[in-house]
Amino acid sequence: MTLSIEVIWAFQIGSGICWAIVYFLIIKRGFEDQTYGMPIAALGANISWEFIFSFIHPHPSPQVYINIIWFIFDVIILFQIIRFGKKSINDSLPDVYFYPVVFLAILLGFGLVYAISVEFDDWHGRYTAFGQNLMMSILFVIMHLRRKNLSGQSVYIALFKMVGTALPSILFFSLAPDSILLNTLYCGILFFDVLYTILVYTKSTKMGINPWKLDSSYKRSVNAGR
Image (spheres, rainbow, N blue to C red):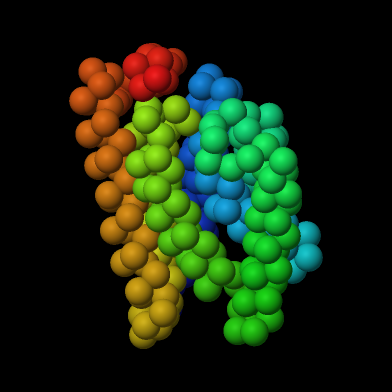
């Protein structure tokens, strides 16, 4: 299918806005709850993808500007991981290993994103973007199940992540509908995004918290889960 440049831009900008909202909400909740809202491995892949396709092999406009905005948000999330991470993971990882693990996640994320892009000659970043997005969707579910509360999480984060990924999924499906790998990634991402949204919504209602409120009332969930 051939799409007009206006339609392609609309999907790109729409996805960019949704993901910017996701990042903003993750950062907002992170500072409110003194935690981080993006799994470390996901952050390592994300920040690497955005660096590569912003500064090493920059995408054409408008995507390159979207990438740079996302990269700035991810730098703030990285700060939250460094600032609050040790406390958030409790005893699941000895303190002495925490910073090396964060460094390794970024180093490995960069290496994998770059290597896959070279191997598949994919400087559009499609395979790495959707591959790491599936990883992120799975890790969000795991993070939710491991935490006893809703710290760093909200139903709006889940919803905007789902929409922000669905838009480029629709776009790339329209451009390359016969890609078995990409189609599998689209379906896997959607499944785990829907599951994560349901889990966050269900836990909110069980804890007596209105999932649609945007204020800091989620702080009650942190205290309630302790």
